[in-house]
Length: 535
Image (cartoon, rainbow, N blue to C red):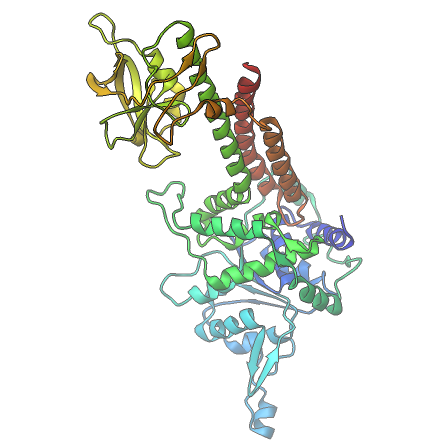
């Protein structure tokens, strides 16, 4: 842990002490302050929303604060200062006396923000975005480090509050204390605001604040982070929300993404990194939802996008292992036929190492596994056909696969993409639901009964040659590859756990997601052992 990260860790411990179950709110408020952004706390009265702002003021040396409870009768004078009558009389200048009001404060807390009138809201737009306040004919650069707004409701629709809502980059839902033990601890505490008289051991100075903001702007956004953001944007086009009938699209403005980038840079800088990575992205789900019902789905999408490269690598690896398993089984089935002097299928076309092609079925791109075709019952009046399935090949658009029935196959294929059928065969045909389809013959396979090897003179580019089938037995580095995927995922998990702005609840969600990932890793390792050691 570097010096700055250690300092932030100790500062957060102080800020969070004595404020029960508000670690997330405090951590994100500190991040927002150091990035020069704003935060909205959404929750019922009495859940310590104002205490977050009061405590955060202590993080900055010599900081001043301003608090106000809004109502529909609030006037700009109460927020930005009254008009200076003396200046109006002496110089005929319309200016506000801002001392002690929002324009001179470092930390601002505005409660019931949506009840403010249009005059206040319109001025706040510039305050939040540019940190500017126009006072008479002067434009003031505000010392504002953080504006914390609070409300127990979302902004009303159709009242022009969308622009102000979008300015609050971080949005956190505050709840009452959930843990019974923590609740009892709160009841037994005599002080309404513990640690109120204690000072921060090493508060942030104005020079440090300015320096950190300048240096954070130089932090790069890594390529893997940009790819994760692109993945999130794509996923947001269609989001499934629990207990809702229809999926929805979640809108995030370009301006909002720009401010999120500033938060990512600041997060990376405060933890000693010269570039922001996917480890900084998890907490950003607090910036991406528009309604509380979206929070769980948005967090899941962010976690999924963070680990997407590892999942894709594992899926590619698992598909390769399964393909080599099928190819080896096809090779073994053909070799067995040779040893048993079964020459029925010697001249059938082998496609992509382990398929036979079925002619005149569908669009002409229907294939059956070599192993399945050889195991099919021969058509007769006495023998019943086998149960099978036809499904769309998920790896090749427009291709259909015919297989003998197995529960594993049925479980892995969506119902709308499969059809259950009956299957049997003779020397030249496959019978699907009793209808004969000719198997494709190209040339004659050259087979060596002594060792069961396969050759052939085929006139199709997709035909598996002896070298193609043999290449399946190399199985290069599968064990090392799956180990590397696991190590990379573990490394990213550790980086997320060490991120000082990630909450315990978020870490638990990451663990739950990775449990499913590690289960797929285990299944892939089983297939690898089958391939390498015939287990």
